[in-house]
Length: 534
Image (cartoon, rainbow, N blue to C red; front, side, top):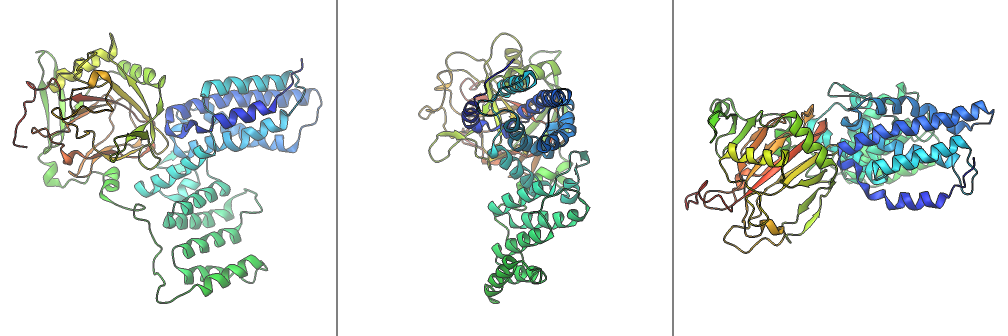
């Protein structure tokens, strides 16, 4: 059987799907990892057919098979492979840099395809359909940025990460080329101290690696390190690094050394490498790492059993903060219900968006603000309606959904991406019930006022990271499967409670799923009457 391959189709297809932003959902990355196994099987079948028919195989294809086989076998068989950000970095890199080379070596313009090559082509088409969007360079860069973000939040050991250990979770080690890519992206984002630390770690690792690349050697890395110090305004330090290399016979090194030396101005010379404003610690990042309440504050927190309108149904409640009150309800959603919400949400995922404070416009989630994918599930007969009713029982608020003047919004199902997070924000819009309607609201919510309260189901566990934190009040709620966090966004007077500024901390290892149910002011007059005193 023969098949004429139209290579321009693939080029057009790849251009069309570069904006998939797969890095924004670990769930989608897990699908990618599973589907990669199909590509490997088809590739091995093609190589096997060439050997059987005694046809020559290029050294590049043999090298690619050796590079891909072990890693892809692991990625396709380990269901949690993509939950490690270093593994995801590898995964995206293979799809962007290695699999296209496989196809370009086998499939070409006007090629005649034998059965094995045709099977490989068909497998590619099936995989492309299943993953919806083929990853692009943007995904790889974003995954490298995620590793840098996780480093500045959680201070993981860079040497261990390069060797394939992240918070005691083992993964595929990073090769020098990948580390250098992380360094370049750190420099591009002005994360100069991070770039320096990764450079120094790479220098320590280089003597022990078998990785072969004539462009990656001790000399090249020292030049990067000098450039980092120069960009930081430490020209003297940059010149000192290259001084010992000026006798190596490389004219570029000599020129750079002279440039750095001539840039030295002792009065302006900095003593420490410059850090960007957001590169290192603030209270938000500290809370993401650990609880920050004092022993005196902790001594006032407690758990209790809360009654509902159904005599036999009580709730297990933990107080995470007293004023304003942040509550954590335990064992309030079953595994079956959580799985249903995850499954239904995954069918409708789109890139999470944020609302611009200056214009009230809904805009895509910026990579430095929100990294996740979102779906909306409306109440209907079955699990969704049942869980919404339960929220009403547990909070004492009206949660009935209706075509007009609904008490609650649809469920927002969210899955976070690599290093996924949501920077500090308020859930309320500052659009009170007595003011003009919010123009962004759907029909069923027009005239229902602001988000009086937030209910957040935790639909699974996360191994490391992902806590919900409230920087203004020093509160931290860890992810716990089957539990739900609850707080009021508005004061009794109807004004926005600025104290409940909150954030979703970056997920280090795991796939974080949440289900948000926002309760509106409309319908709460008897449940939570207004009060002129805050």
